[in-house]
Image 1 (cartoon, rainbow, N blue to C red):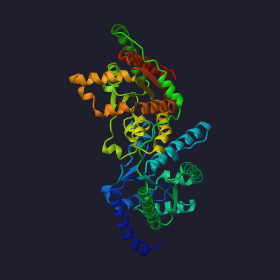
Image 2: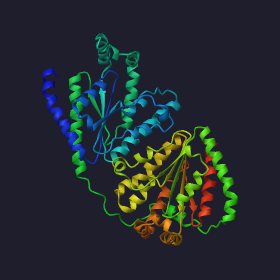
Image 3: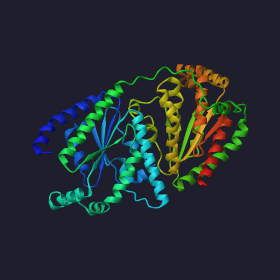
Image 4: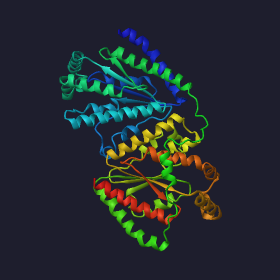
Length: 484
C-alpha cells in the first residue's frame, strides 16, 4: 500500500475505532483481540499502532511470558481467566494464550498428548467466552520464510531497530518449517464457530495494520447486531429430571441418623487432629485442597465450616461465601469469580456455595437461558478436571435436610433474637420451590459426580452427625488423594 493511500485512510479508521469504544461502553459484551503470528510478522508493531489509535482508557494490553511462581502454583488457565475484560471493555493480547503452546516441541507420545490436551483446554476456554457473549477476534499475521528472512535482515541492518533481532529470532527462522506445522496444528485445533482464526498477510506493514483494524471493526458491528437480536431468558418451566437416578439417590439418603452430644465430643477431637495432620501433609507435598459446600437453606453449612477450619492454621485457608453476584462479577463469565480464588500450592479454599449455582438457582429462577444451564454441567466438570489435573484435591459436600427439619430451624431462627438475621422472605420463597430444587439437585448429582471430584451426600437433620461425617470423609479423601 502506498504511503499516501495509508495516511489518507488512517484518520477514518481511528475515528471508527473510537466510535467502536464509545458503543462498547453500553454493550453487553467484552471484546478480546488476539494478535499472534510468525516471528518478525510485526505483532508488537500492530499492538502499539492499535494502542495509539484507540483511547487508552478503554483498552488493556496483555502479553504472557514464562509463568511466575504464583502462576505455576495454579492450573495453567488461571492466569488467562484473570486477564478477562469485563463487559463494555476491550483487551488486546500480544501472542494470546497460545504462546505457551507454541513454545512446546512435542516429539514423544507423552509430549504429544500433553500438547493436544493443552490445545483442548484453549479451545474449551475460548468456547466458554464466546458462549457467554464475548467478541473474540483472533488474528494470525503470516510471513513466508523468505519474507521473514528479509524482514530480519532489514531490522538488523538499521541501527535503530537492530536490538529487536535476537539469536532466538534467527533460531525461529531456521526452524520455520517445524514452527509453521506446529502453528497450523494449533490453529486447526482452536478454530471454531465464534472464535475463528483470520489470516492476515504481514509482508506489507501498512496493509497489515489497516487489515487488522478493518477486521476488528467489521466483526464488532456484526457481533453487535447479533447480540441485539438476542432475547432475555424466558420464565422457567417446571423442572423435569434429566437423570432420575440422581433424584432417587438423593431421596434414598437416610436422614434419621442420630449422634448424642457425648458421642460427638468423644470422637470430634480425634478427627480434628487427623484432619490437621492430613492438611499439613498435603501442604508439605505442595497439594492444595478445595472444599465445596452446597445444600438447603439452614442445613448447617456454616457450622460445619467453622468446625472444619478449627483444625487448620488460619494463615493457610480462605472461606469464600458465595452470594448474589456483584456488578463486577456479573460483568464477567460466571466462572471468573471462582477461578480467581483458586488456592496457591499447599493452601486451602472453602466455598460456602459455589459454581453449582448455574445448574441450581439460575436454572430454577430463570437467570440464564435453558441452553446455558444445560451446557453448565460440561463446563463445571471441565473446570474441576483442570483443578484435579493440576493436583488440587477437590472435596464436594451436599448437605441433605428434610423439609420438616428445615421448617423447625426456620421457626427457631425467627424466635431467637441473635439468629433472626439468618432468615428472610427469600428463604421462605425458596422453601415453596422445594420440589423443583430437589429435581435440579438430583440432576446435579447425576451429571457432575466424577471420580476426580465425587459428590459426598451428608444427612444433615442431626448437625452433630453431619459435622462428624464431613470430618471423617474429608480425612479419608485427602489421604486417598495423597496416596495417589
